[in-house]
Amino acid sequence: MTSSAGKLRFSATDWSFFKNGFTPETYYHHLREIGVDAVEMAPEERWTAAGKAGLKLLNMAAPGMANGFNRTENHDELLPAIAEMITDAQDNRIEQVIVFSGNRVG
Image (cartoon, rainbow, N blue to C red; front, side, top):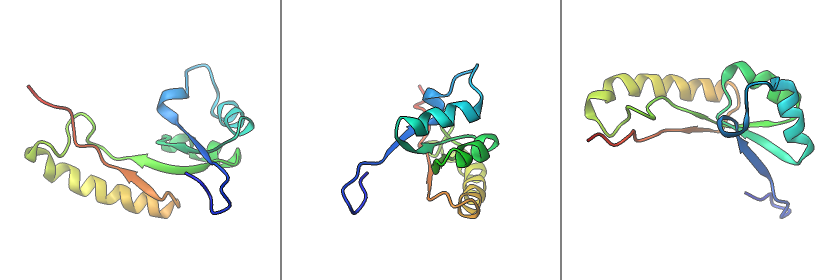
């Protein structure tokens, strides 16, 4: 994504780069040092550390990655959980909630 001034902004998916052995504070500080502006799908317990490092929380992942909307039997459980997550995102100034369709069965 780019800003109106044309400056590139970078984000990093938390789940693919955060490794055991890092403290959240060290990890997010290093991301900021290399020019990352936002973190994606960070777990709630690390939101404060990301914010203190100057990173924006870009999005959060809704439930349903493995058992998602591709199975109608999951709808009654997923819809209220995702609605609650959207409220949580809004309360925490997180602009996006990613909803997964679910893994293929069979």
